[in-house]
Image (cartoon, rainbow, N blue to C red; front, side, top):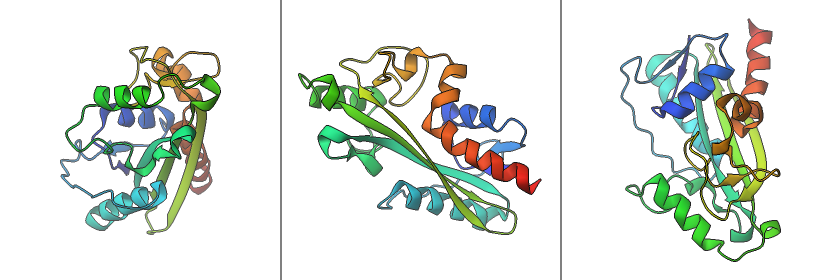
Length: 192
């Protein structure tokens, strides 16, 4: 069994789909309540901090991730503060609208954004490893699509569709989380 350090349903189902050969349990399924402050300076630091906290509590293999978007025109903003840049009480809709507004009238070639996911995995022996995935795209001129979560409705691909306009299967083939999880999956296969 591997514990997944998240309470985000969308993220959990995406990870469980990609790692379908593994027994994955979320914190909620195991009745574990733990809050880890994401105060690291990098996605890697935050992911590792969460994984270490879960491992210390359970002594069970675990996966934790931190992800976010880095917009080139805004010098990498919001980066590691992606989930919190408008404060803890801001909605995802407010965050998306804010970013679209920041890039109003900016041409597409300057709306470049990287979706970055860092996954920390701690195995049964306490060995730690980090996996990283990056998906390149653009910030859309307005939100569109309704299949997804987070920034999916404003993350536009080269073909003009947002991640929220893809089916779950299509998204799971290209997402930054998928890229990082494929590396983890390879390591899990080697170990099994």
